[in-house]
Image (cartoon, rainbow, N blue to C red; front, top):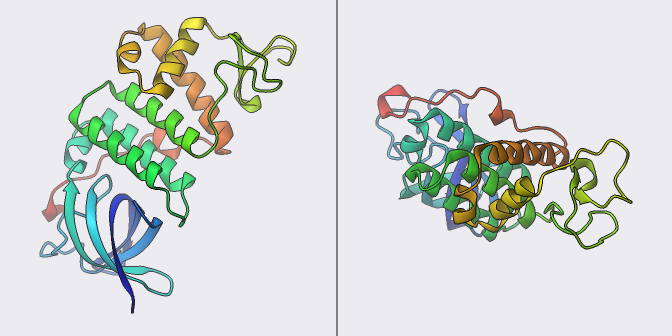
Length: 248
């Protein structure tokens, strides 16, 4: 049975039998991977908390017919406990991994991996505001997937902006000639904040007015919902897990 080694971030887990779990991971070189971690739910498991959501690990896997098998796992980024200790961070991280799960298949996507790991690390350390970290991640992940919103030129005709009308269903900002009747206007400050989030300009992001940040979040949520055909389940009411080995 062939084996391989890769870095991976855990997206989600599901119970399997009495002691095993199915672990869905985004790897650096192999895209999305689903594997069985045998005995991981036992308190004596050699994997411990290394294969919980939001953790980054160096994993050795055997290729299986339907599911691979985790043989070894060593921690590269222990972000789970710090994220789960804060409800807002946990909600944001859950939305991030759900987005990655839906954007990436089994083809290599190293840039998506790097982006997600960086966002989870920043979130766990509280480097930036939770809402800004999530919104920036969503915009950049969609951009890497080929779905960047138009924030300057018109999404339909390409006319140079700035434009002040935005419709998620048509891909972003629209000029007056292309916008359907009733298209809602967006203030220059909200568009500027959204552009800063996409660019990762944290000085500009953190200097924005609260009302503009909230409005940009709503705009981004609408765009994500349209692009992915539905909203993110994680932005409902997820409950943080118990992060200790004895809880499994």
